[in-house]
Length: 309
Ligand SMILES: C[S@@+](CC[C@H](N)C(=O)[O-])C[C@H]1O[C@@H](n2cnc3c(N)ncnc32)[C@H](O)[C@@H]1O
Image (cartoon, rainbow, N blue to C red):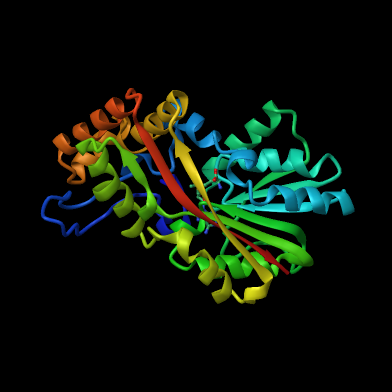
């Protein structure tokens, strides 16, 4: 979903220009204020709670049996997590490969690194290193890792196949490359609260696509893997969902959206950038209303691929 980093927006200033829909925001949206570029301290803590709610157990289900199977024959697995963000998935990967295995977690945005390190320390996980690196140019020799993974990273890059090609390069023969990407166009939300729909159609999707990202990454993932050089018979592909229906999940999701895009710190910069204040209020109030409704649901399809090298 929405990110606070990404090479498609290297300046970290989220400006979206030229909205064409007559009832859309007219000029530009920012995900963070210019003067706060790269400053995660402006994000409320519940945003981190939202980001850290992603784990290997809930977001890499398609890969778990493969890790287990590979670990049985090799207790020294080396796993690379590309675009690790706050590192909550990477830390669980480190637990899954076991104390004799090792995880390297990289992100193009140096600001996220201390969050991952703190999480690992907090959980007593020692077999992990966090580094700043771009998926476009991974600073590792060919054939270094047994497993190379990314989650919700390709969506935000103009040329996702180039990142996959790099991931394939650093994977050992016999190893696997795994990716999971959302498909924003499959997001379903109920009830159709206008502020929430406005967020989905006019704000969230445009934030991603106007920066060169993809609204339909999930369904394109197989094609991207093939464009990166994988042969069709090396690839296993599946689809999985994100489902937010229970009160706690709804609260997590909605406060994440409010905090990342609509929170008080970013409100002013978005208004300054041309998003009508009334729209910002409508979207924030829409999510606040949605999360309290017992009949509220949100779900989205994801594409999953495993490439066997
Ligand atoms: C939506 S977050 C996903 C984080 C994590 N994988 C997860 O699912 O919880 C996307 C992350 O990918 C990083 N990212 C985007 N493009 C990247 C690239 N080309 N190379 C490395 N990291 C990238 C961003 O900085 C951000 O931290």
